[in-house]
Image (cartoon, rainbow, N blue to C red; front, side, top):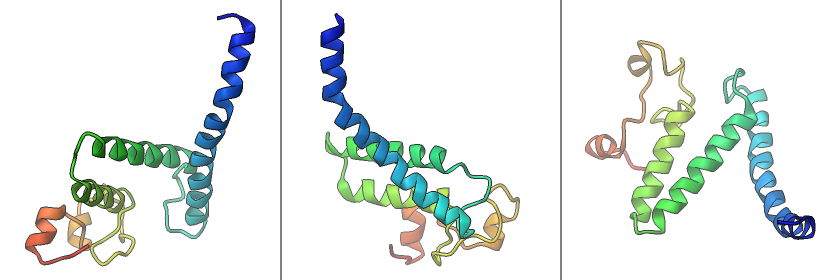
Length: 123
């Protein structure tokens, strides 16, 4: 590609790139606010977590395109977030980190849609 074509391609993709940057910057800012409130562990890098969440979300959207059931994708998305953020079945932040040996004993944790259904726990 010669330089004029490269410049034209760069100008065409600029709005797309800017949209992608906003799509990461906005969640990163929200995550930083949640971290300051103590809702997300202090050692968490907001931008890294934002990239992970956006990637997971986009991956879930791509799964729906070929026909993965929307309700299953939604249920899995919720399950991922609950586990990622250490949210208990009571929708509260867990008392200790996930790698604690007694985590499941100390917290009512989300154990997957099948287990929750058996226990009569609804979304």
